[in-house]
Length: 137
Image 1 (cartoon, rainbow, N blue to C red):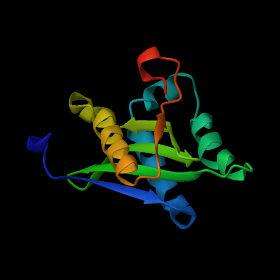
Image 2: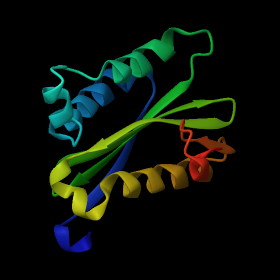
Image 3: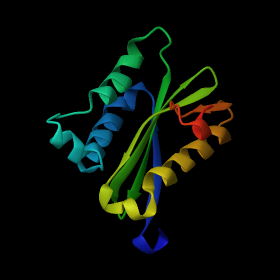
Image 4: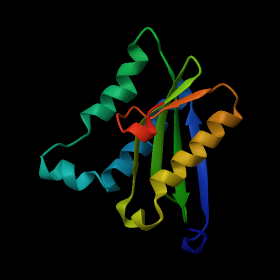
């Protein structure tokens, strides 16, 4: 990845920056690997993403939401959305610009987010929200 150019990761968190983070997420979604599938099934937007991002905030639990972004050559090309609640971090959504698939930006960014979460010492468990056996919490 170093040969591709300068990269940086950024974490945006908190209610005051939620619309900024969501706008960045939507820009990645439009260039992401899932966009072709949405066009194929004639969906303008990922309704699960909207429900997760907006819906969880209106619950009594009100989890803390964070979004990590990966920039390469000043181009935001991946995101990882995470909700924290009672010491657990839930990996709710991730996507990336499919032009950069060759260096697994989703895996890279997820690794950075996990490191940051554990370094912060508020998270003691990661839940990938999947039934895949090797990824279950």
